[in-house]
Length: 312
Image (cartoon, rainbow, N blue to C red):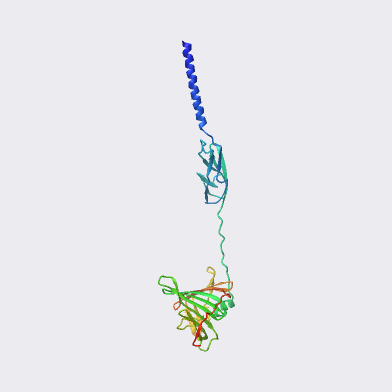
């Protein structure tokens, strides 16, 4: 009887052991080890302060342990947190990602930011002859001039195109909404030298409606009721000097010489490039603030419009 009981107990024990063993085996079969880990990049090149995020992929997708830990060696070159790499100092380092006993690496090279090369302005000193030529614009065959004049609250624009005695003149001013509006457009051509009265005979082109008219033997003067302003014979800077910092000639006193007198200026500066005048700024009580930009030397052309002659 006792022997039968022991046999039964042993059989039960074996059965329980088998069941437990089978359960343990089934549980072990449910766990899958990580087979590989890869990174989105194996090399990074960053400037100090730069950042880039690496993505780690663990395979197979159903691996039991997919938690990724990050490290970087040596320290001090870059830092890594959840895959985000931040460059700290110049040098090379290796970022390592580990999961389930597998690891992958990315080489990181850190450089200092590239410096933008400093642009050194061209320092050009004009000769006396270049200065006198530039200040007497009538001696230049072709050029384009843009003038911005500010007198009080009024702003006027003037574009002049000069071609060997022929002029195309555009006057504009700020409109009611602040936009630039064309006020008048003129063409004129000097046909003779200056007379004893200081005028220049020539042809004056103007519009009547949409038609162009030309008034022959018009006497151009430096200032007249029609708004024509011939360029002065010269701008004279009293004790002008070269400002190294601004790369311009400047003076605190000067004059615009006219045939019948001169206009005083309280401040003026002139900028040159390759021996040519490119910009003049003038201030004075009678003229306000004037900026004049000169360009297109030798290339400006003026085509006189077809017009009906009047007062021939």
